Image (tube, rainbow, N blue to C red; front, side):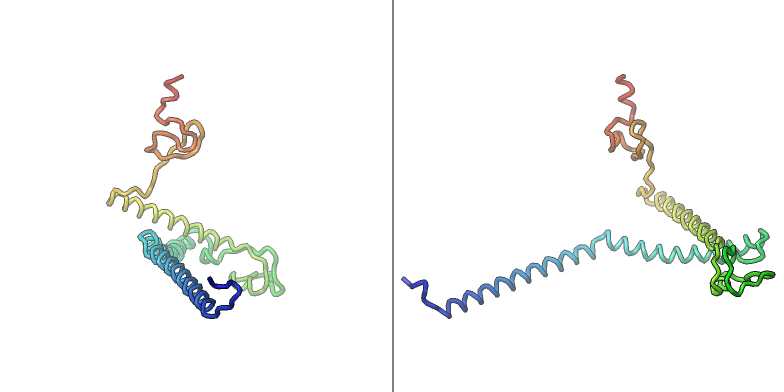
Amino acid sequence: MPNPWDFNEAAIHRDEEQEQRTLLQEGEQKVNRIFSGFIDFAFSGNILEIAFGLILATSFTALTTSLVSDILLPPLSVILPLRRNMNEKFAVLRPGPNYDNEGGYNTLEQAQNDGAIVLAYGVFLSRIVNFLGIGLALYGLANLYQYLSKDPIIKHSVKCRYCKKRVSSKAIRCVNCTSWLDGREERMR
């Protein structure tokens, strides 16, 4: 029987090597699990669909912005007595040091460079029209897609008459208050 107080360098060295191998194996397993999880996540169908949708949305937004700012707003500026492009409409709240009392500022950029405090309502109106244009176009595309594929993108909803929260129009029971939406509670009274 070996004496526990005897110093055995070979046994200690073997134990250290075994511990290092075990730690390396555990680390390698963790890295493999993380990497395989990332691959599963990155190449899953939903992520690729989201990436594709974001790329399309970016290009669609640029197209709609160009339509609004280059095609729709210039005729609107001519029809309405604006005398300049809609994006250049602004009101001076506090003039800068080089403000001309007779002529004022000619452009929004000139006023901002002079340090004036301006209310750029033309840019805001342009962005509202842009937002409405993008929203209507996306709604039209969603309706077209839904018509062609029978896949419901636009989910219609109604208000529950008891809890007043919105639920799917196809639901039989409210997911919030669990009341029957087909009128069963009314018939029981």
